[in-house]
Structure formats: structure tokens, C-alpha cells
Length: 182
Image 1 (cartoon, one colour):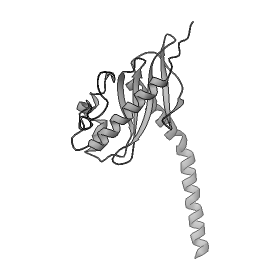
Image 2 (cartoon, helix red, strand yellow; image 1 turned 180 degrees about the vertical axis):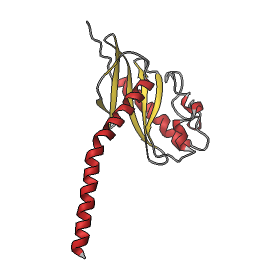
Image 3 (cartoon, helix red, strand yellow; image 1 turned 30 degrees about the horizontal axis):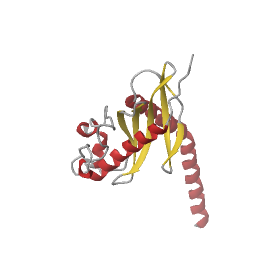
Image 4 (tube, rainbow, N blue to C red; image 1 turned 45 degrees about the horizontal axis):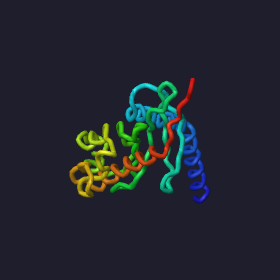
């Protein structure tokens, strides 16, 4: 009986390993395409996008991409992760060289469906970040003295999303525009 169970476990393990080997590349390619699409959604049209770079800020590593138009840095797409109600909330934030937010996009979350998950779809909430100038508006929810209206019944998620955007803006402030002379 132990020999039979061992054989079954070995066969199942081999099948699982083979499935992983076959699907790893397509999954990685799909993830890369989704990221490229997200970057194009949070940055202005045109220009060239750099490969991924990392920077440390506040004890945390941030991944970012630089957009250049005619050799001049025009914006960054910064990946920012905070803790939401259900766990990690990862947001991609497009930030111009002037510090303004171009747009945002949720890359991943574990928020409650129908409540916190609205951070992906609620246009009233998401629209507050498009074109936002942090020097004019306070990047906090109104309950905390800021200018961002929270998603109804999802204050914790709204706080986490707003914090992710705020962190991305602060990271972008530390980045120096790379201007290339031709």
C-alpha cells in the first residue's frame, strides 16, 4: 500500500511539474503584456518607455518606468504597494515631471468584491486622481482632512489607494529627469 501511494505521489508530482514548465512562459508573457498595457494607460500617449528600474524610498523598493519624448523625460509610471483591507493593493501611478498625477491603474488587490474591489471600477473615485496636482489638493481621504472622496463603505481601501498614489508621487519627486542631447 505504501509503495502504491508513493508511486501515485511521484506521478502526480511529475504531472504538476510538467504543467508548470509548460505554462510558466505563457503566464509570464501574459503578465508582461498586462503591465505594458497598464503603463500605456497611466502615461500620456507617445514617447518611449524604459525598462524597469528600481529605487528605494522610505525603506521600500519601488519599480518604475521612465517615459521619454524626444530624449526628454516626460513622466514616470511608478508601481506602489500598500496594505488594503484584504491585503496588498498594488497601484501603477503615472506621474509627470511637474509632480502631477496623470492617471492610476490597479495592478492587483485582494479587496472585498462589491466593496473595496470598486477601487478598480468606480469612476467617481478613480476620476479624482486623473490630472491631480498634489500641490493644490491634499492626497488623503476627506475623513483624514484631505480632498479625496472615499468609496462608499470602503474607507480602508480608499485610504490604502490614496496612500499608494501619494507614495508614488513622493518617489517620482526623488527621480531626476534624464535629458539626452542628440
